[in-house]
Image 1 (cartoon, one colour):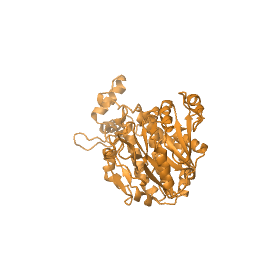
Image 2 (image 1 turned 60 degrees about the vertical axis):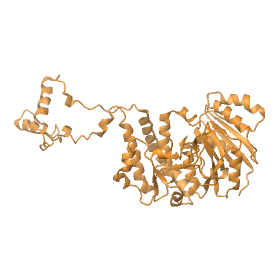
Image 3 (image 1 turned 45 degrees about the vertical axis):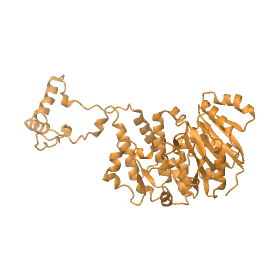
Image 4 (image 1 turned 90 degrees about the vertical axis):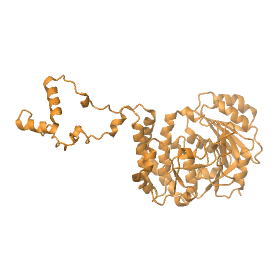
Length: 449
């Protein structure tokens, strides 16, 4: 058991004034948590008048609320790191601005963390939908490639599997958690490079590998307008963050010896998903063409007969007007192709036949594909920076991944186009470490679709 002197409630808001009106009103009705607390709101580069509204309507009331303004959007990670730097509490409660906390929310978090052993760095509360009927977050699971899911997301509360008081979690949800400020800072806080998404998964892994734990407080309940803020980023821009941040999470946190063994399967998955998205673009099917499996390289069978020998390059061929040159071209090109080529040279304007038409080259028009390629480009451009972060994470390791995954097995969940075929293939399966515990599930088994 550890005593808590003061709590800092940290709320980040980007163009979310309409959400803050509800959230701050609910915070004003909280039950006494038994300790002093403050409410810090960071206006994260908003353009909806949030800061002016707070200065006019909220701050003059002499409430616990303090406004911190940033001219630029620092992202979820940078913004919350800024709030922690401004906090005076010895523990910080992260709360999404698009939530409505129940009256006992903060009291339940404080009670859970104060009663926990010192090695419990954070407690995570329960998040439900706005109507109070379905689960948003109770327990999260990690996938082998750095992604994560909210287990039983959107399932009715009556049937959802919600952890019990004090149950261990691999990570706490960044929208409803209380964490010791010292533990947050010692672990490095949220990674600013993430901007948003999976930063809480990354932090949870770092806390566990650093020797600390995370538990659940089911009575710390908030209602959530799911994706109300994240929708402002745009669906496809979020795809960039998901893929980049998942790779960073895996790369930084897998311990030496295991990272090198899981990396081939992880990279194969990333390549497969990128390929599947590329195929969705106009002309994408040409990426599947093998230029050495058809007439392009004179390897196509002709009525079941062996393919003719390859034709030398123009520079290597004897002059066409010589008998030897004629024989080489007739045999190499085949009669029909030989005559077509001759007609083009003779008449100049002869149009190629339909069989000669070149396939349409790929054109990038799909925003998901562009987001995916942007993620890969970022990773390639920041390899050295990511390596420095990995070194820092591994330097503070006190608990092995083997021990962590014994508690929280990694998941293998087909999510993207092509995943089902890839994950079922013997070639992919052969790249998975034999001693890595994996739970294979479908999306329907993970959440309400």
